[in-house]
Image (cartoon, rainbow, N blue to C red; front, top):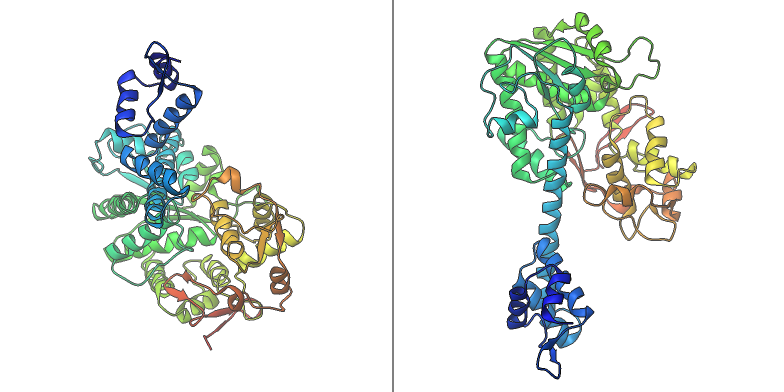
Length: 468
């Protein structure tokens, strides 16, 4: 075919083809009897491939280096492999950023705010050209996430909604100054695939600033939270900030709802149902604020002794705290098998016939008294115990599990076919120890759990076991 036809079919112009030839990306084409360059379908496919590589971030120089290496030896050099691996990391970062953008767009779609002046949703922040709220709202609702937040925006209560949004039962939450803590959280969340570190830091700082400025202005703040671990840790965080600011606020904290025997959270309530909780709000007393600040310090301590004491004695001002902290301590390795509570439930689910990550998540949640984690964090647990050379889970074909979402595509991860390995069966039966087989490297609040610092929690005796 002639050059014009190639350009049209490949979606480029003729000068682009000439440029690729001058750079050596395209070989010199053969000429016909009339002297015109002659191309074939392979050229069209190759030009399309170049454009696709450019679209995901490869430069023409990088494409040329790879092609020259492939022509010389059939495989890239070690140096080129390193460069390609770095390019993969760059693409992964862009994918994470796009996922975060999608979440922000979902917030915009679900927002029902009346005014952009003080709303916290992405639409309002964008409309204000990245500026904080122009005026403090007369009423600020603080919620555990967007589900309950979007429903609150649809009520007749008015005010702005601020989702707290941090999974504090995962990753490090050390006893460091606030600015450093937010940077630490952002680094962890970014490494898990939830966006760029800079964007997450900015979001967390903006969240804190909105709450503190509203409190300092003496305006009305109401915290809406539930009884589970996810919510109770966020509640401690927000109350500790209020205590430090010397401010007062109100609470709506529930563990049940009339007519819903299987109540799991505020996010499943309608706007009318949420409004019925408004009269039940109560002031956060100075004693409640002080208790929350002390429990928050215990959670962030480098050793979990104080955390265990709070789990055992609880707090009259914070009635759901003890049970949630006991569930948090179950994430420490258990004395007999080294499994965390989530890991044990995951293995039990697969052993009972839950053959995919999606099915295992549903089954494991049914084993929880108060479900507290989302599917992506559950898949991270599966990948941790199923992704190494020695593993407790694997695919039915005997392969290790891939990285979990959002570091991989959820639609490809959740239908994987799972089975326990021989080691998984041994550990689940209490005949082997997960920490001895796989090691351990995770944080419970401010406590860094490693093979040499393997604090353990006995769920039956509700007791802490110090490292040996």
